[in-house]
Image (cartoon, rainbow, N blue to C red):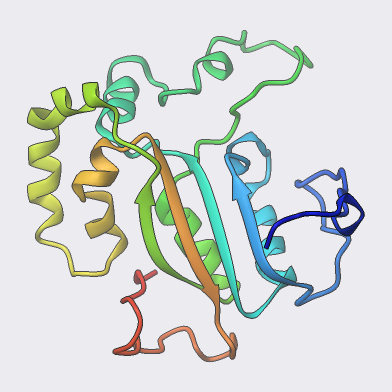
Amino acid sequence: MPFDRADRVRFVRLDLDERLPFADHSFDAVVSLEGVEHLLLPARCLAEFCRVLRPGGVLVLTTPNINNVQSRWHYFVSGRFSGFRPVTRRALATGDGGALAHVTPPYLPTIVYVLGQHGVTVESVGVTMVRTKQWLAVPLAIPLWLSSRRTPTGSVARALGSWMLLLGRNVTVRGVKRRDASGARDQAPTAAGPEPLRN
């Protein structure tokens, strides 16, 4: 739907580490682009996204892919994930040294778990892009890919070992709010739709 009139769009500035000022089931869709890694309490924010999403509504989020080979390598050799250098270079005794961009590494299994606990079934996980230079990491990715082949299809572990997540820059998650969030946790996927990730 094109935004042809500015007065139809309402912008609200708020703190995503706090409760959102919207009623339950207020929105048909929630989109978060490169946001949760900036928060001190990303799990609380994800729970709030789920709360304000109506049953059957769609949640889409993107966040840095700390599970790719480059980020895993950075963690192995330096103790930090890719994109999180400033937070690791702060002095231990630093009080309020100013705002940082990336403060909480977004671990995909935790994101899937939190969404599932709050009634959202993750239907797909992908990446925004694979840079050409990432293909140089294929030799490091092969053991991780082979290990993931031993895990169940549709599991988070299988997704983490996919070529796209091993080489992709930013992870994308798409989920749908279950119509009956209570007791629907172990519902089998329907033949018509994609198989959701298991949490």
